[in-house]
Image (cartoon, rainbow, N blue to C red; front, side, top):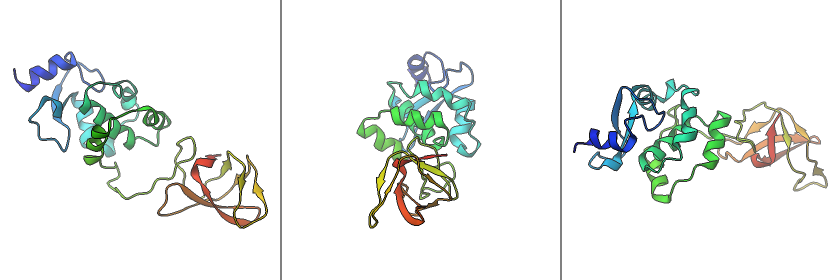
Length: 193
């Protein structure tokens, strides 16, 4: 039995990502070599076009990942994880990323062949406690009262911090002014206003 026949049997002749039933093709999930059935997904042309060109991704199409990410098929989980990471600016994708579970070897595979959709693998992305992407100049509010080191005051929960700046090499830190003092705040204690 050839690979296409095996993939049709495994997938029920449907795209393993979006359930489409036409224009299905095998796709080797990098960096695998295609020697095993477990190196492939069976996907429609729409999915394959966007997998190969992540800058042209349609977020609406990929909401199907909230279902396919639960697949028992390892290469489907790998592709779902990679695509959800590329769509992490979407609230639904960020929430799905928090729920998806990959065993250590599958996660290593997913990370090994992963590229960020803007082709900048070293880009630091700052996200608030809800997973919303933060940008320099945003206003955030504190989700917890924080003792400010080196001072005698506590930044109260709900305090607005305006015109934040991002710590360049640390996605978990931002800078802002509270009570006239410039402080570093952990992103897990803020939400975008």
